[in-house]
Length: 456
Ligand code: UD1
Image (cartoon, rainbow, N blue to C red; front, side, top):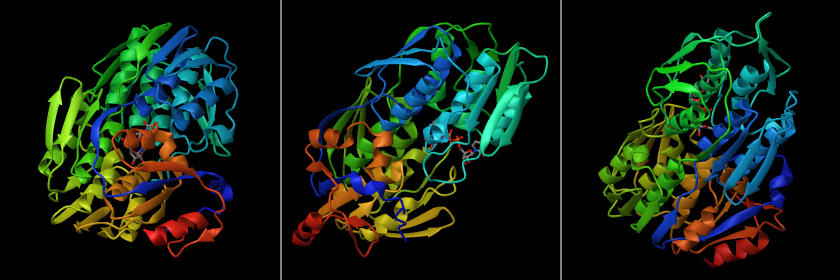
């Protein structure tokens, strides 16, 4: 059953009205990668010189991370998509829970603060409601580098071991290739004494982006993008200018939306090899893909059912599992989608079933029987990527849908509805006023919207 939060603040928020069964046509500009920008902001704490970041996406997650940095005394100046970050005067203090709550990446500051200032105090992080999301790999790795860490009343307190003025290099083998832990440890090791080797490191493109920026700042990091990363600590890092890589997950979401609506669109700029696993599955499911330089064009076709299994990069990204499931709901035949990264990332299954799909869930494996079409409904998005999946499902449906819970969507998609309307979709963001009615799906309904749904 869909849970509606007891906190009524969402009632003041907004929702999307989406008219289904339209095809997408044209080009869409892909924004900078959220997950890169977040960690690059954390990395800017490693120097007292200015960092100029270009192509920063305008997202609420980035705003939250900016507020965390400001709380530490960092000066931020932003103009359009450029962010100038000045971390010269930082005062190390415990970050307030309200600031880090809901932003997993807030915890990634710990390695940078600890290695530059010798101490850091960060409350346990939040993030999307998709599973346990432990931090043991971050903590074990930092301890191996010479940190003393205690967790007191849900606050992680880290400092250097007695009489040491720096972290020192170590050999670390991660039990699982955690993206965040790999990033935390790379940042911590970049100013440590001596060589650090991280084995079973994550290989996501965002990690390579981090290493590229750190190397521009004077770090000595070798083999990022491989399972074994080597970092030779340096004494000081300096400022630089860096452009955030394009968001492969945003690009993948638009390509999947095009496949689901038998549309032809082009996404750019992108780095096509960041999307290889996704493009292979789109082709297997019937779409035609053309890659030209930094753009990818897709021509949707009849949708065939294909199985996917999420995996760390270069495998199929967990962040596109929900959007791909929306596509499979209307494929011809049966498909199986296995989530292997997070244990609770199937929030969308019940919502898609409310739209008429036929999905059975067993232990993180979704068995999907393709149906001819979905029905427009009123739905409450429960996490970032499942909200995107609902919007894709709404695009394919035979009537109007209303998608609530946009605070999730706005965390990770810049101007999503504007980009979709630029592709010819009838989609509108509306203020959610007068929402005191809960429908049979337990989602919230606007009185005005109800009459429209009934008329649809
Ligand atoms: C990052 C991304 C997120 C993406 C995920 C996997 C950011 C801000 N977020 O999240 O969008 O879905 O990678 O590609 O970059 N784990 C442990 N111990 C740890 C850390 C992780 O057991 O200390 C487990 C997690 O529970 C999860 C798996 O490792 O099952 C992957 O998590 P991780 O790669 O760390 O994801 P994040 O860095 O949080």
